Every structure is written in C-alpha cells, then in structure tokens.
Length: 135
Image 1 (cartoon, rainbow, N blue to C red):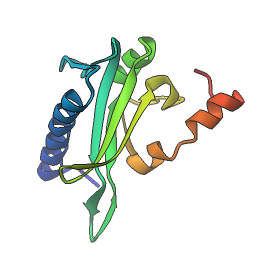
Image 2 (cartoon, one colour):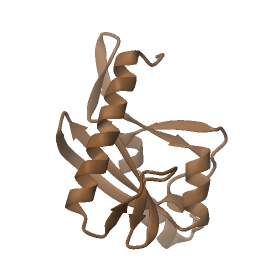
Image 3 (cartoon, rainbow, N blue to C red):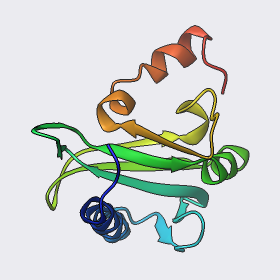
Image 4 (cartoon, rainbow, N blue to C red):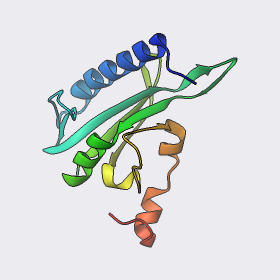
C-alpha cells in the first residue's frame, strides 16, 4: 500500500513521541537528534516507533517500523542498538532494546520496513546461544 500524507504525518508524530518518551523514561539515554537519535549508556541508539494496529484497506494490520541501510550500518559498526516502541495511540504497549547487529542478517536495499510483530517474535537469544547467529 502506498504511503499517504496522513500515514507520513502519523509516522512523524510517532517518532517525536518516542524520542520524548525515551528521553524521559531512560536516564541513560542522551538525545542528539542527528542521523542516529542519540546514545544509550554511551553507545549509539536509534529509536523506532509504530502503532500497534493500522488501517489497511478495509481491515487492519500490525504497524511497521522503517529502517535505513545508512543508519543500520552505522549502528552495527559502532555496536549500537535500536530502542523500539509499539504504541496504541499515545500509550506504549510493547518495548524492546536490541543490538542492531542482531536484528537483520542482510540489508539488501536502502530502506526496509518490518512489522513490529516480526521483530518482537524473532528468536534472537536462541540463535546467539546456539551459534547460528553471528554477533
């Protein structure tokens, strides 16, 4: 489905909410607002947000998070993390902090979207423990 001005506006609002929320809730986070949002305990960190459910034609689907290869590569190179928030309007219903290197094996294109359910259901800890995921 093609993004609309309304969905772009909502995405922007989600991002601003996430930045403010994390800045207030995590004392170790320092907001910079540059290409990557800031630092969590002196390591690069990028905040990603999305809505729990969004309209999709006549039905709804899980919200998606938007990633760029440039940000991802920078986070991986500097051992940075993603701070992820799933919102139901202005209420955070799920959150996760994950090392960027553990999120995607391959980043084939300049941009990537991924539903929060896919990200939050990944068995990353098991893969690392079993040696099937390289860190």
